[in-house]
Image (cartoon, rainbow, N blue to C red; front, side, top):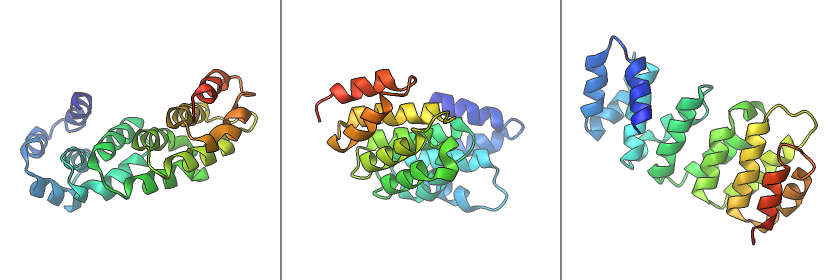
Length: 184
């Protein structure tokens, strides 16, 4: 949490009073900050992150947007908050992001979130994502590896076929072999 707050403090440089006010705000003030016109991205993220960690579902939409952001630290912070939030829509949203072929470059944190959630949507989404990435010279090796590791952690027997195919990919072979050894 400290790393997120420090990153946002640095982004808020020159607007320290606004940052401190959001840091001290109650949940109603944080929820209002999510929709106020003119709020910078760092302020919306801070409000959504704090609401998510507090279990306040008013943060859901903003956190999902941040989970799909091009900036990895924002995605990671959103995934952390969504994991704590406990909103039943989270797994479905993460699965949609992880399986969207146009957003594969940004799928790492949705994939990791699906693994952490262990929801019914998790294994099918990771299987679909990994299946798409098992092509020669695919540039999304980190996402593919996160899928393999996630499927290993989930130990879902439906993943056996795609994990077997992953064995032939040098970057994934060790993790795939480990995932296949897990009982499932």
